[in-house]
Image (cartoon, rainbow, N blue to C red; front, side, top):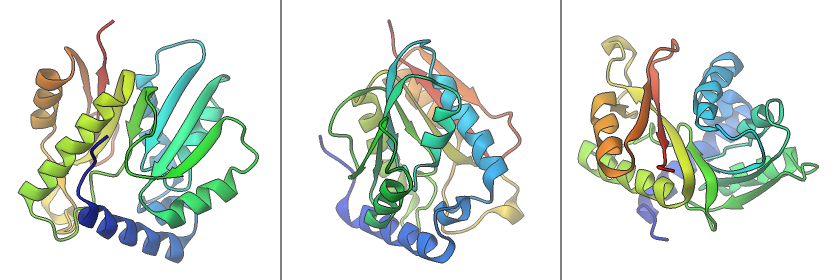
Length: 211
């Protein structure tokens, strides 16, 4: 399965390895502000899960595996694969969840197998020195990959272009939610939801596959 540019991913991996080294396996270690906003973010992403029984899920950019903790408190029967381009993150996640029979962690940018659902949290935000055009190309590659590797649907989040100007940072990418909503409707499914009402400077998009 083709993936995004190797050089770009190496830059992102180094960025997050630095955050992990500085803050450890915590929300700040994956460049989020804290646990409260992290849980709120996970609640939006998990709205993609509609089955009442067993399901499988690929967590793209899994970090230290915080989403697995969230899933375990809400769903009794699932299998989880976490992927990250940072080897340090995968090592931290593997150590942290060594006793979990539901999960495996892989050092990779793309899944080695399809799952019912795919989620990507935060991996479309840190563009570093990449231009808007370069980053948009990367974003579309990630969304294409999520579509190919998810049978029932996928969810992702982005920082919003509606953020206050004084809060924006040059190394981060702020997406136009309407542009990505339109892309998902035209390219992936007629069943797309845009969530932009949960109090953070971001949005979540859910793409449900046709039955």
